[in-house]
Image 1 (cartoon, rainbow, N blue to C red):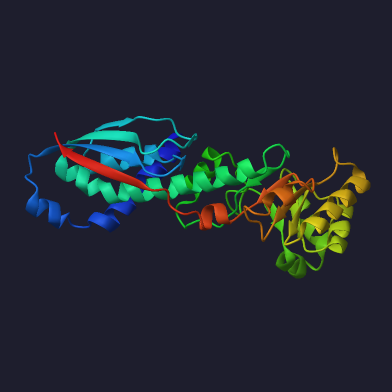
Image 2 (spheres, rainbow, N blue to C red; image 1 turned 90 degrees about the vertical axis):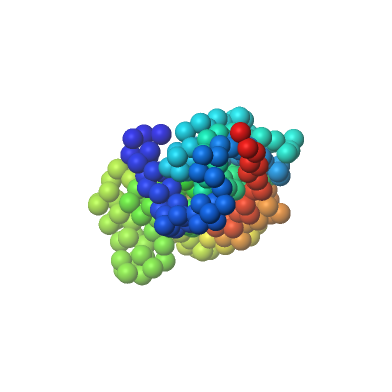
Length: 286
């Protein structure tokens, strides 16, 4: 991670610990001897992709646990569970203080990586990439998008500042699609322009403006396939706009969408609806 990313991670973890620990862990402070030492193991209990060990390490560090070791690589699907993924040693009070925040981050981020991996596997061999969206938890976007990448997905725009995506409200306020595209090209010639379209008429018109990508919003596979043919007839698939499908995509129908020939499928669910992967922290007296 870059220095800036490390600082951001430090701040994210500090906020999470302040929320959980507050003025102190009153239970551990009143029941666990201050000098007690412990050894902890974090165990993956369900198949999936682990991601977030660096966050766990930072949680441990801020709680005063310096002896932390990752035991398994991240970003790989693992069926053989239970499996130890991280060990830590030090103050028993510190380990207990770190436990819930560490597991919350690890379970959430690994859940995103795991669900992403399921989608990536579902479209394997089609040439279609799975994209994430801006449908992330406030303050956790960078971590959640890193989890998507760990699961084999591709990060789309990080925010409103690094990519242009023109939607119906932009078009209405600009006075039409052509004006919206012209304004975007003029203001940011260095950025690709993507336009959301809801039907084939809108797709044909958008292709005529020379945009770089079409977002096919809530189209069924048959309509998607027609949009692909329309694009190919317009300028040729190698030179024309790329196509991104979005809306109503599930694990059950994602392959059908990919087989239409779209280059990308964006799925908000991989961040906003990923179930947490199950982990436990097992603590023993050192």
